[in-house]
Structure formats: structure tokens, C-alpha cells
Length: 293
Image (tube, rainbow, N blue to C red; front, side, top):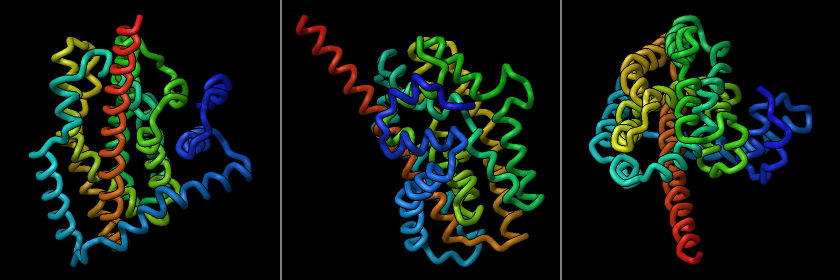
């Protein structure tokens, strides 16, 4: 998929917009140098800091136990933004939030493909099982990006991800830019495997607020969220299997794996907070405009 010229002209050329642009085009030498320079400031710098702060895990089993503790704690304490989405967001606010995440949802998992040639056979097959599901097992009607497109249509929004990129928050653009780096340019696959193990497990509770909002608001195209709540229990197990296979064949760098977990956790949280704030700000501005007319 190439970046459409009208969408390109509307981009403000912020760091995350530039990364999104480069990640969806074939860059020349100068553009690739700019991409690497941008990624050195983020996410590489944050990943390096998190790696330096990682606990001294003795083995992968200890890391997975810590990951399970982290997931259980998050599930037990939804954020204020998640509660807002589930219980309070209006249809217009929900549409704004869904539009923010369209930069990812409309191209879902395409950013992950770069990891496949970097993995040995058993780890690659485990990740591939997840990706096959993401792409609907070859069934166009079940592809996750297609499910998101149907959600966009019902909400009256564009199905062109680059239209959304021109208006997306830096934090929601980072949400998808991160996985391009993890899959294709992070120094080792350890970061990606930790990140994806966390993500596929956290979706099992992280998407509940979106599914609840769709039910509350009468949005029929909520299958995008309910499908994840079903299938990601299998994906979580597959990604743990991928980590174990990688550790068995290569010896996982546990600090890098944990950095991937923490980097993804922080990026998702920042994106959710920013999307909700943008939706609430937009609705407040609309209310003020209506009051003044």
C-alpha cells in the first residue's frame, strides 16, 4: 500500500507522522537515513532505557511469571480511560477514538511481517499461526483489517488509513510505528517476542471496554473487538510458545524481552489516554461552538 498524495499533503510532518509515512512507502537512501534517525530517538532510546532497568531474571520461567503478575494486575484495575470508553463515551466520542486507532486497525498486523525471516523455524511457526488468524485464514470476510473497515463504515468514517494519519495523535501513530521497528529493525527478535506476548495477552481484557461500548451504543460492527476477545486466548498461548522456542534455540536475552513488554505496555497506555483525551476535547469544542451559535 502506498501513501496517497492528498493524505501526504495534509500531514504536519511530526516525528510520528514521518515514521508512519516511511513505514508505508519504499524510502530512498535519504528517507531511510531519516527513518533510522527518528527511531534512534524513539523507540530505540526508550527500549535501551527499559532494558537497563529490567529485573535480573534468572530464566524465562521467572520472566513469564512476572508477565503473568503484570497482566493480572492490569486486568483487575482498568484505567480511567478504559472505564470512560466502556461506560460513558457517546457515539461521537467512540467514533473519534476508533478513528484514532484506524491507523493501526485498517492495516492490522501488516507491520509484523518483517519478523518472520528473523526467527528460527519453531518460533516462526508459532508467530505465523497468530498472523494467519489476523489475516482471516485467507477468508476476506474475517480479516481483522476488514472487520475494522466495516466498523469505520458504520461510524461514517473513512476506510483509508492515511486519511486518519493526517489527524491522528502522535501517541496513536506511535502505537503502530512501534511494531514496524520491533519486527524489522530492533537489534534482535527478543524485543518483538516480549512485546507481542504482552500485547496478545493484554487484549483479552484491554478490548473489553470497546466491546462494551459497542453493545451499549448499539454499534453492530463490534465484531472487530469480540473476535479479538475470542481468538487472542489462543494467540497468547502461541506467543508464549514462540518465546519458549526462541529461548530454547537461541537463549533469550531476558532484559530485551522485558524491554519489549514494558515498551509496548507504555505505548498502548499512552495511545489510549491520548485518544480518549482527543475525543473529549473535540466533543467539548463542538458543544462550545453550538452554544455560541
